[in-house]
Image (cartoon, rainbow, N blue to C red; front, top):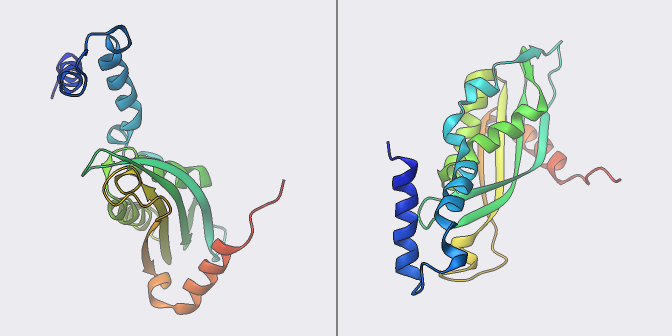
Length: 191
């Protein structure tokens, strides 16, 4: 494992690469600030899905769709170290157990707060729900804008990437997918 001092030195080296006057006042504490921010941005490495999904409740016979939509997230592309952000929609149909809705948002955060690609986040959230809740079905749909497309390369500001993972009845039954998509498209609560 690399020490904090080694990590800060790596940032200093990058600053030397980027900035002619890398020792100016505004950059002196930058290595420490970068490592502090990365500790927060990449905090998903320190948490397991099993920790978040361990507290479940009796579903009490509820067998409809449970959907938490519009979960905002920020992540970092592992290919270019550029940010990408968007929203996730996470749904499942319980069999015996349900989980508090904040746990679904935390699950998205665990996966997003790592060096990632959007496909892996989508699959990972669905895998964890399937493994820990054993639902009749689960679905994860993620929409995101990627810095590697907006600020470099093709520079397409309005491009949105959508990924999905459909498991169980959401994969097998068109009616379940249709109901889910109608719930996702329905208008949000008004204030």
